[in-house]
Image (cartoon, helix red, strand yellow):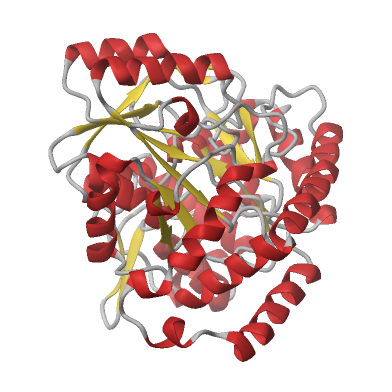
Length: 461
């Protein structure tokens, strides 16, 4: 047991979050060390004048964050040993928290109805092969042919033979990395990149090297220098708005990066999950370097989150590797989802939902422009999020903690860092994860924190 105790005078509503933040801060500052046994729920409640339920919720929140562990019959203990990376989003959506942490499209009843209609159609039209076959080549030839129509909207002219269906972008990313980078090799990416890339690279035994960026993304000279210093097997890029900073890479930058990749004969993995939703963008990297680019896209961020299906386009040199890696990691994409995606591409529903999403996002961005006026945030008209650099004195942990204490969940910038240097404190804010009313309220709270005195934020915890 420890001598440290939370300060009841510093508790704020909601009390369970305020208590959790005090304990989290004590752990971060070393006042509660690894293995320390915390007071029982009843003892803590009595000491602070809280209900046992409130303390239980605080402990549960700390368990979800990986800061403490609960052992039946023994109690609750501080847990500060190395653990799995924390996701940038809240693991659960709590009723009183406005969740701007998880990246998702704007969704309303129309999306539920579209999926219900799709499943009703599927109940009458599901092919026998989609229900019974274990062989991808027996199920997907028709879907690959239709996929090329969607990929044309993304800016690519490809053969169906180069298309694999995946269970979304994560499946595509995993398969692509396994296909071009054997364990022990190095993959280069931007210093701020996809939040799953760091743990995924670790699991696959890859070394991830974060390279310098500017307002467009990866700097070609930084890539060239990295390739000259050591063997790089591939680069991972998100050039079209879906990257954490919502940057859109120009055609000239894409061409320059493709030239560096060709000079050093390295593969390119391109994550383009927004596909045709981004208006006025340059062609994909895969159009500049088709012989070496593995292109990943999906429908989850532009149509309906539940439509977990995507496409992975691979050049001829990697087609066999992609097929084999996908078999061992996924076997094959879910046929029922493939049937819905193919129908929606063919009958225009997919593009109808993309256009709907553009309009919805325009409204969300207008709210953001109003509520965050004067703050140096980064966004794009079709981005699902914004990137807010924090002014001098603000720390990510304190800022995110204060936002949560005031009922708003946001994502810390460190969740997207691929290296320990070369970045500045920032937070990512999702625009599509809640209602417009809650978004307005949440952004107002974020704005007041960003414009406040950092020292006051620290003292208020």
